Image (cartoon, rainbow, N blue to C red; front, top):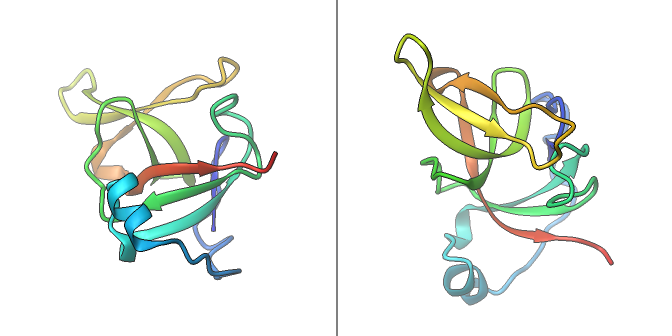
Length: 131
């Protein structure tokens, strides 16, 4: 599955399993604080999170952790596509709760989405990058 660091990957676009990674349960549980059965590997697509994330990086995402935490990186459906962003909780002008979705790349504007319209997939635990 892919999460966009840009305009958003369509939900049905990349959902089939392509490979299985076998990571030690203790590494996930004790080093990352994750739930081993809930960890999924996603590929980054796009450049809006550079230099933190690059196109082709892999993300280990804990799908059991869906409560947004200030400044943490999450994969979520923003109403248009699946994205990976840093998340902050706020309110719009009418007081409705929103998520502020922040890109690392200054060429991409931060934006908000109503909490009711967002679906948080999970918290990014680790980034895996080829060197």
